[in-house]
Image (cartoon, rainbow, N blue to C red):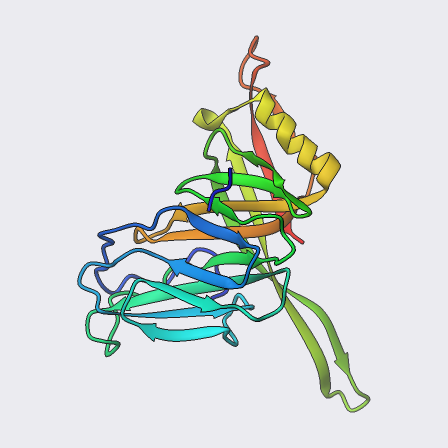
Amino acid sequence: MSYRMNGAMWNTQPFNGQGNLITIAGDMTVLYNQRTIILDWGTVDGANFYTVQVSLYADFRSFIINANIEESDYTFTDTGTDDAKRYWRWRPSVSSGANYLQPWSEVGSYWLDTGASEEIEVARDQWAVFDPDDVTDRYWFDLIPTYTIVPRNIYRFQGRNRNGDLLSEFLTSKDEIWLQFTGAQYIAHAQADEFRRFHNVKRDFFLATYTVGRWNEPMPHIWKVELTQDPSFSMLGPGRPDLLQGNLALTEV
């Protein structure tokens, strides 16, 4: 059964308008195995106009899509690079784009891989890990973790000629993700075993979720990640080897 970033994963711009959602999108796709893309973010009370943008870059330096529409969903054909991540965001207007109710939404993401065996959807507040080479091998979290997402800009290479002129520069945006299973967020040993299996057998894998952001804005997220250290969990308390607590540190690859 399948369930269907602006540089910061969580938008930190100040709120300058009321934009309450009156409907929230259902399950949302995080991995597409075909090029027809459907972005759906739910209807904002009073809005009659939306701008939606899609980019290969977390800072939206260029666009796959930069569209002004009257509906709160958008369908298009993604003809770009295969097996790669896309970033998307939106904002609503009650004045046909003359001004906007709020800043850009939290930045969401999806992955396009036309070679995948099936699409992956996630429900609200759901988390999953799955194998990028076999998306039917997946594990749905039994418990929602508390989490921290930290965006990083990594300069891969700079080349200069003898005059000191910059010849090339490659900038990569990658997220560091902390999943906390502590306090009330403890996990059962079976879930810890799944984390260890993906770490030891798969090494790199997809992490996906569909969270609701700062202004009640639902956005899906997907990362291709690896654990930066071996999973380490301890017993929640004496005599409870079935209940564990600890943190998972992951980084995009």
